[in-house]
Figure 1: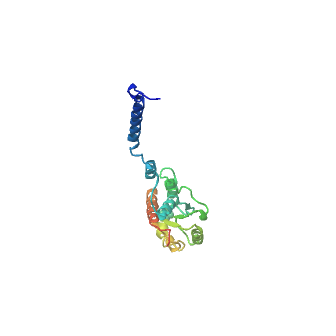
Figure 2: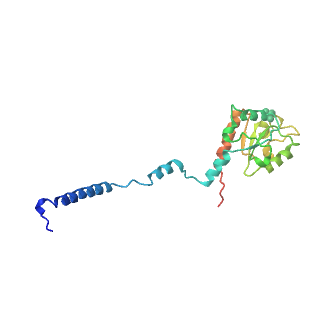
Figure 3: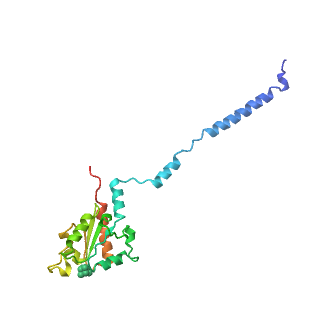
Length: 198
Ligand code: SF4
């Protein structure tokens, strides 16, 4: 059969082609836009949730945030330590509100009180049984040098004669604020310590 092109039979096809062409061009135009970065959300997550640091820093942060003092308070400075541990001064902010009756669960000794030679072997043994790494704060004049009892025949003239002391907190007795300052000094010292040995 012969088609009479003048009757417009071809027109719908041409129009269809044109419409198809327009649709394809529109699709092309919309498909040329840049594809959103699939990982952009990941970048945001990384920015908010990842911190680059060293293993030493993390270990040191964990240790200085969970100091557990051993119970070893032979004399009157202990009352200021007890006050420091109460709600007003709040030692728990350093993770150290739990005073440990077992030296094996403690890594800090706060020497709150006069030490006699008779008690010295027990204090030394408590220190030796504490977990490594361990630290000592000599609290009060008696803990530092024997204080007002220094000349007495039966008083140890400072805990550092028996065990290594990291921080000295002077006073008779030191106020809780002074003890907190000493603890902060110890925490600074701990932040500079290195765990990884190469
Ligand atoms: S320093 Fe003063 S308060 Fe502390 S144990 Fe010695 S005498 Fe007592």
